[in-house]
Length: 182
Image (cartoon, rainbow, N blue to C red):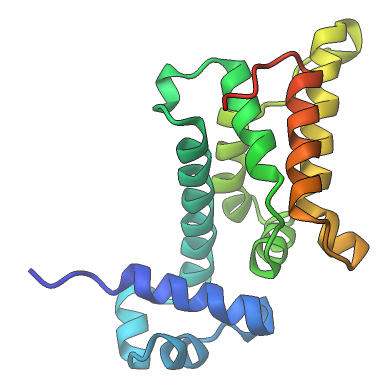
């Protein structure tokens, strides 16, 4: 059986977004990037909206795979602290242009935000009533700091040295009182 071109198309669409932005994602641009025909793209994604929705799902699934790899165990074997620690460590990796642009696009479309939100809820849910519990507040602040670390280069327009990124992530994990998992 011949493998599907679906992932090839989605990876090509990510490269288009990375290089030229979300508005550059068209059947023609993705077909050229994937070295397929426009019809080949439309076979898998009948509309641009379908392609963009699948692109959000694709990147969110890749993100979750990275979280699972960092955690080293299946999600159902991880406690809340293990999931938050993995989230912090993975967030120490800089966001790509494609990830940032797609997440910004998802902010206004619940169907695009859903895959991202589902990953966040599994790995780093916002604690309820954090203002009433010091440990919950610490977890919330660590989550927010990890989010900021992930976006740092896009906001500061400069790179943070890798050793410093790892040190910040390790500090956040320790601040929450979680073993570093190393």
